[in-house]
Amino acid sequence: MSDRDVTISRLGINRRDFMKYCTATATAMGLSTSVAPRIAAAITSPNRPPVIWLHGQECTGCTESLLRPSHPTLDHLILDLISLDYHETLSAGAGHQAEHFLQESVKANKGKFILVIEGAVPVKDGGIYCQVGGKPFLDTVKELGPQAAAVIAIGSCASWGGIQSAPPNPTGATGVPAVLKDIPVVTIPGCPPHPQNFLSTVIHFLTFKKLPALDDKGRPLFAYGRLIHENCERRPHFDAGRFATSFGSEGHRLGYCLFKLGCKGPITHANCPSILFCEVGSGAWPVGTGHPCFGCVEEDVAFKVPLFTQAYINNPTPAAGQPSVVQERESGVTTGGAALAGAAVGIAVGASMMAGKKAADRQDDEE
Ligand code: SF4
Image (cartoon, rainbow, N blue to C red; front, side, top):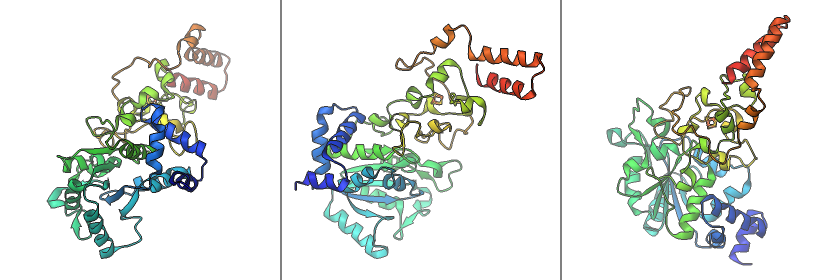
């Protein structure tokens, strides 16, 4: 059995599905599908890069999201792709034994290991507010960062401080890029981030021996290059002026745009509406389930801008790929007009209070 066959059988899928996955990964990274065989070779290589995974101020939600996807292939892929040498939550060893192994692994793999950091780094008072192994986390990050082949800050906490950095930020929590200023740090923000974005970044590094193209905040452009608002399935409602104005209102139940409920999709860069979560099909992301995006990947938005504050719209023009909103207007009767007419008739004939309230609700939801 070849290395590739061994990996594929461990994943519990057939060769065709494996190649489909490699092709989909290439596409998700904005690459030609012709690189799929190279991705397949990197994934099935027996030379798995050592990974040291540190935890600072965080909830371990990023690890949970990586290891508990609803589809088993993702977590198998992650654990097959890398050699997880040190992980404070998953390691079997503990205490001095684990810390000793960390030092040994760093010594043996200097310049070759991938350092993944989960959680914010508190820098106030010499970093005393987060200590692991009797040592400030700040010192460990500064010590290991320069020795790694690549540094990945996973989650919003590691990327820019996350909820710990919300005012008044008593511990001086900040992100890894602010601590390792002289080293390129890939950031995969999200609360939690999508496992596929982490996996694609690692696959890119293994396949091409270099990091993917990044934006000015260290985020891979293939995942964070577009606004959520550009690809949101509720965008036709936004363009047509149909908004949910309260949770549970008729507009909310009909799937109208959540802008007036504080959706931060227009100022948030992420691929959530394209790759969705939990591999359960359409609608499986916060906005799809009826909750406004709260901008978890954006340093200046999440935990800083109040949930119900409306976002600033930079680009009100509909994206070219969105369905037209014109057809409805061509009929000469807008849904808003129909609702108003219904209300007038209802009042005139003394219809129930309920009918009037429903019409008022709908009028409120539409502009
Ligand atoms: S404002 Fe939010 S819900 Fe409305 S279209 Fe934009 S991203 Fe989607």
